[in-house]
Image (tube, rainbow, N blue to C red):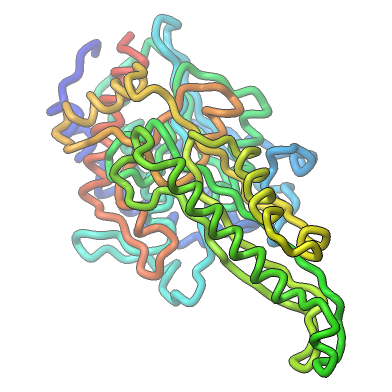
Length: 416
């Protein structure tokens, strides 16, 4: 079939929707937290074979930890037996190539006892990963099955990537990029509410450390207290936050957000004893920033803000590092053909879709910044559901999103 209508697409997607919902619930029942993704990836591999798109495992080399873009985490695990998945079908060479990407890993259940016991209430599928991002995997599977049911042959190559370790900073995507994945465009399938995002906010986590002179509390006024030094550092960090907000006001694609950038003070701890002047204090937090700032620039500005203090001891006994998550911001022209192709597809399918920037970071920035590939984010559900106790995805929106994705694939790759 060279031409396919939105009615045709709707019927083909709907035909597989009930089965796909069962697939989603089975995926949710696999607790694919960091280090535990193997069973879920094996099941997803079976699903790709079932819809006629055989996938292969892609090894993640342990040497990836030495990559400057690698995101370290406290729960780091060896990569033996933990793989990315890639399915690929060649076109006839006459169209534009496309990568569809999402992730199978999820954040821990925390205190949500039913996180990995999925249920469907007639409207929502509930469970950890339902929105972020196993519902998106179901969306992709429905779209691929519909393409074949409609006998759509594509002019451009189509590759689907299901990665791990997105939640800790994108190491699965980083591995594939370092292994040389290329395409004319990338759609990262995340919870965009069926809007199209050609830009993402960046986020980096920082670790600040102050040191003092530990002494008995009776000698407090003869000592330097690391906690008090950190209080001074925090004062200047919050000054920097206001400067960052001012510099980012009304930035294109992000105008709708009241506070698209921020500095978060996450955790703080000090070493010592209640009746002892603290000798060390450690603060960990994060900074969100827009594409008007490079990540290296934000790191330097945060440090320089603390160095404005008149406290000479603080300036000489302050250390700022960025050992963990470091997601850069990115943007592409909102008039880029990939953006218009995906947005037009959604609108043609009756989806009330908009184009604007996302105040969240995800794997998209790796494809845009490291691989230099045009990249957008598109998928079902509200990102506010992600990582929450009670996470759920509106199933009808997943089905509708699959319809839009089929049309977007045909728009971009072209019919053979």
